[in-house]
Length: 92
Length: 127
Image 1 (cartoon, rainbow over the protein chains, first blue to last red):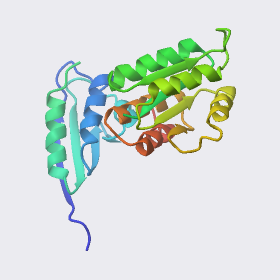
Image 2 (cartoon, chains in turn blue, cyan):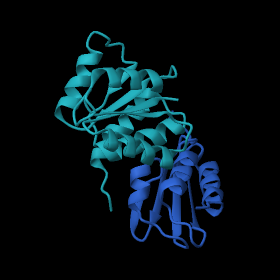
Image 3 (spheres, rainbow over the protein chains, first blue to last red):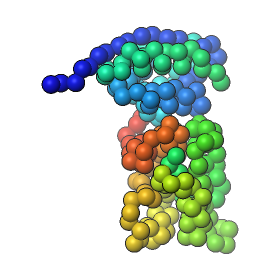
């Protein structure tokens, strides 16, 4: 029997003045690593593995950018909810 | 947490990269620099590497990144005969690998996952 799989998606904006670099990016990646699902974050036509700090840094997302969060796996809805609230709460 | 050791011919390079990786990943993860020769000039120094590994080791293993050539030989020489896998020299880009490994370690990931994140750094575009 295949494992139960779910997918989930949401968009969330980076707070004004908070770029997804260095510490904020690490906070985001650490949140993603708590989940089993495959997680991606998209911005400006690019898509990154949300569990890879280097891929997330390479997005170069600046404050106010809308991020598209996608998850596939058994904890997908929880993962998207947690990442979304993580992004909203990021500070420099 | 998995410890990280950065071996460079230059102490300034090893220290600067340790600062950068700690700044990104947070202060909880141990990132230990080992750089320069015994005379304080550019070079490598097995004793400094051994001490850095001991400082970085808190029981969950240590990932070692080295900059070039004889840095790698120095680490290999030290680890010879101690192939229990607890201290792992990884084939990774120095800066990107160190940052990726430090963030993975700070998230409580295993030695295997921290080592893989460092090695996978080679394939990630910067922009």
